[in-house]
Image (tube, rainbow, N blue to C red; front, side):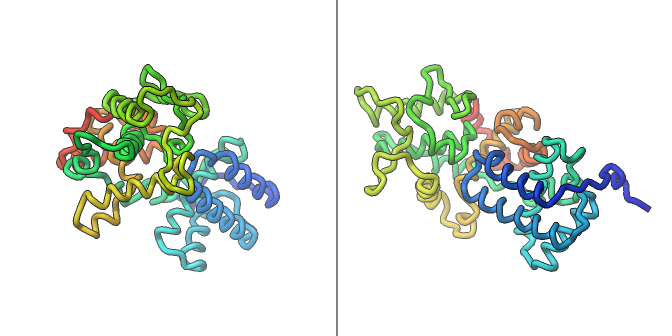
Length: 312
């Protein structure tokens, strides 16, 4: 007897050559806004999926096929649970792309228990940690203002490291908006915009900067004058994070992405529902937005109500 929902997913066969082409298009165009490391991981995951299809010879995008692939990753390939979860996430997003291309009527990977909603909720900064991380003295240097501004853009505007790396002076408008490369505009909360203005004033003084100048400039002797690399952005934030806590166990859990998770928690505390969080954070999956709703009370207990102004 078939399981509930099993009959929703009728067999679909996609030729191997067409599948290979779809994977290439997905990696090249659909993931162009992701960090290089993420693209590399997804590419490896989908090549593993393609190899499995060639071996299996009976993969037709049914629930049982997805489950068989998951078992293959864990038992045959002996990948860790975390890696299996990552590979399945890559497959879920690829299947959604195939739905959008009309190759699949539905996404079967969304129905596999445990891959749409991670059991491990995001890590976020407590209010005490955030106070230390975002502290600015009375006379901050241009580098300190640069790093604080970057952290605000991650926390309050939900920019990606790639978008920060690509940002130029012209992308910041006087009305407090940030213009993305695709032409879309993002709202910059007032406190963030004030910090941005302080950074620009300290950096350029009374001179008029070239509008094509990188918004965030590298201080490295080798790349001085060029835009900060994504690695440089992460390194700058990691240096700040090292001062947040004396606990090594806690420190290893914190990263630049923790700022984004903290911002998501602030949205939930401010009363945003999952659809509004998806829109503000530019998320693709409601399950991701729901995680911040689940964390709302815990984040309030961590004192984050005091920082709601960071997203207003």
